Image 1: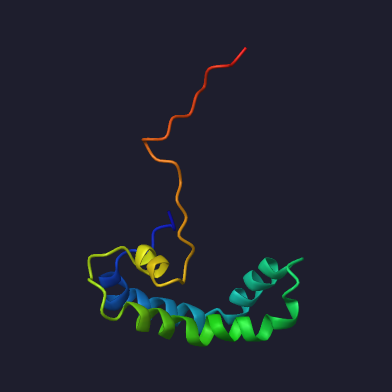
Image 2: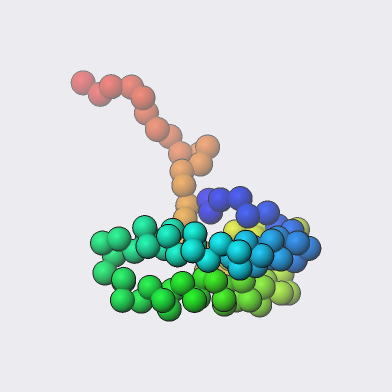
Length: 103
């Protein structure tokens, strides 16, 4: 489960441009979010490099990774398979969770 980012085709058909536009128009907001994430992280000395990565190179990196991927695949899954997102597995319907109190 990575969240809903649409499909690879959605990214290629317009979401890429929307993200680029938003990042270009909202650099200060992106910086504010980054600052919140860096709090107590020990990475504050890397702030400018991280901000530059997000606002200038992230979109191109995503596009390059998924360039040859099928357009109907979930973008988040493809990014996980390419190592850009963690591959997080949550319990599914096959997992048994007891709600009965054990004496």
